[in-house]
Image (cartoon, rainbow, N blue to C red):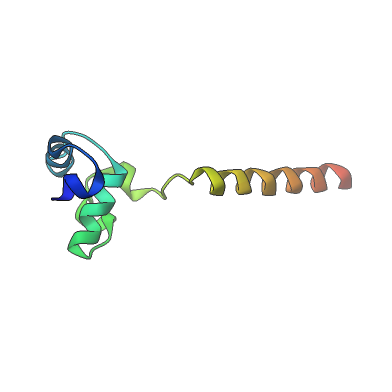
Length: 77
């Protein structure tokens, strides 16, 4: 059911659970189902300990913020 709900193959779910593959999407879904934090469910997977990568819109907004910050700093120098 998890694979179907995520639109993924059952094998990727099994591989993520058994640490044979990595998928933040799958790992976070499993953690949500268990009502736990992904860091607690997969404490041995370093990639899941890091903050998730920003989505396209979030990333674009952060890039614009950095551009503005850098522009302000270069104008002050």
